[in-house]
Length: 165
Image (cartoon, rainbow, N blue to C red; front, side, top):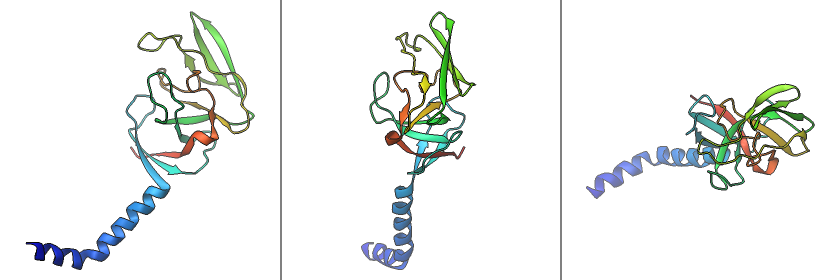
């Protein structure tokens, strides 16, 4: 039995070596992200590591922690604001706020989470150099509308996201 395994491995060694090299190379430049929430349309995303996202791109970033998620959790959101963009918010009453980036609607912030915990509103003003405003279309998305995320620093960015399905 061991002899058959050895013969198989020795005959297929080049294939196994190429497969191993491909996995190592792929992992150096890409990672796969699974969306476990309803925040974005899509379930599986490829993240191109080290690629700086532009406005409108999907981007993966590491969460700073606090609230329901651990520090370092991988978030995937759309880049809505870049350095120099202007973020404004209008009070709708009862603690709800509508956010706008460069005059474009970016989402509404709720005063309480689904679990009834208070949510502090995110920052407004001119986005500073090295920061991004991240958002997702889902009203329950934890993104830059909330102080827990705020403006995402470029050091938190893992890379640009690509929807697979």
